Length: 271
Image (cartoon, rainbow, N blue to C red; front, side, top):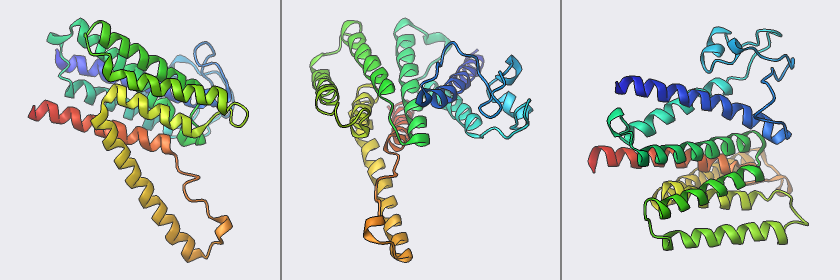
């Protein structure tokens, strides 16, 4: 029975992955993500049900649009697969099974799914546009605050642990709305900070610290690589742009998921 459960979890994961792809494409374009039917981004032809089966439609259509025969970007297929695998791994490391599907386990899984929606969509948009959408940041804040309310009201967790997070949320949102309103409609730095706080609430301080360390190491190696390349190419100082093209949101998301899965696996096998 557990095998069937994990098959269903994988299917749910790839379905969410299909939604992530849609949201990543449409949100930066201010397009509807819930009511407008899916369409080919090249020929704009509306897609049928058979064109929208996650993973399998891409395989059966050989990565091409059924109507215009143009290549479909493999990111859709990759994201669906990664989403399905992530859902299965988290469920496995959390010991989710038919026997322990209790209300508190289902609630934890529901909040994790909401968090994965935030982290995947935020990372995808940042990778494509180097931009953290304010609407996605606000979604992260809302689900994080909801999770705090659940933990304190239902799980009887101490509110004092989360007060500092709430204060930082309020401070960043106040800074974004009042101080930076004239200068930046969408502050990348504020988006990164809000993302880190949301990560801390859902995956814990230990995972978040390791996430920051891993991200810092990647950024450092990238900086050194760019510097060596600029020296070889004899790039002028005014043309150097260290750090300006780094997708910090994407790097944080990947590092966070890797570290979270690692910690969950440690609890499963050694706790």
